[in-house]
Image (tube, rainbow, N blue to C red; front, side):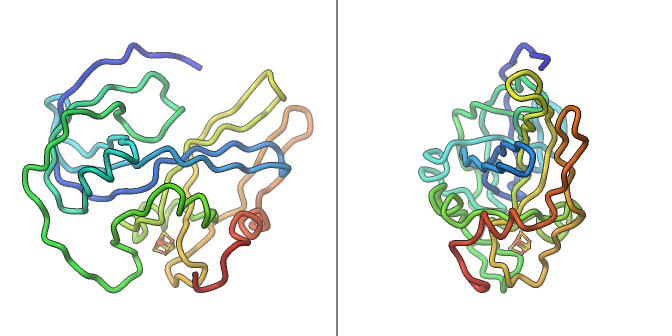
Length: 212
Ligand code: SF4
């Protein structure tokens, strides 16, 4: 994996979404393990002097301290990433964060679930289902149950890995906006691909019922 030299930048912007920051490890159809590493906060604003949309990875403790919510105006510092594919957010190691303008608390009928994002243990306990990329980018984007995971595929055990991003949903199975999308190919060196077509979702979310 190609490594870049990280650089410190300053940013400020208005929060568009707060999602869990997740990575997934896949090995054929034998294993799909989800890791929960904090939150990705998505902004409209300015990063390193450029007006843009960008995302910043923050820790669970930082979210517990600031209680960021959609619509807050925030400023801070962060670092550019070392590896293009290891994580979905644009910037990491966020610091010196300050809320410039607090958004009003709004109550909207879900879905999407515009709630305070829960702690990592809740995502861990709920488990995730594959979510179509179109849904993720569309109506699900602001939902606290949506995530874009950095996925590592064990392609040749212990020797070669493949990387990509995949969208998932931790929300209720009954959510009317839910769409799985196409089955996802999981390649392995000489054996072609097997397809994750939904039964691993059932396995990952077996601890909760249809409406949980
Ligand atoms: S499908 Fe999932 S991510 Fe989308 S609105 Fe429903 S619960 Fe949220």
